[in-house]
Image (cartoon, rainbow, N blue to C red; front, side, top):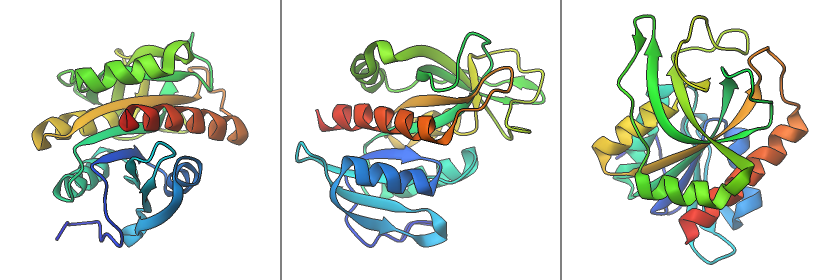
Length: 219
């Protein structure tokens, strides 16, 4: 039995991963026909169903932070997930990135008080297909995954990366260990100067990213 998830519906081999349970529900309604809740244990809402292309897909919340995401991914792997795309949020470190910008992640590394960890790449084939599906809507980027994001922004100093989040490096690393192909698209929700993204724009960007992820996994 998985450590965290208690599936109440079949889990697909392909999954979209999000941190926020509310975003899992929103994407399930946008991407799946007649979605069924596949997990509600521990507040980690998950949904399964068929896409409009007729492919089985699960959408699963991973909670907050890398440790939670890595544990959920391990459960999903035990339940048969073999490919997954993270649709997440990040804080810009590059002043040229604006709120609402989509980032196709080409490399991630963990960041702690001691500096940057070893870089880890997404699954090359899945990442290339995701970048192609997103097209000009997304920029290729490097993300630094932190333990905490203070006050809506990244703690200083963070010397490496175009943006900061809390999960991507852990998911890429754990995916390699589990044999799960991982890729990620992130939404800039806070600029480097602290400008936040509005809720309506955030939802529209997440839907756009989710549609691209679903198309890649349905292909």
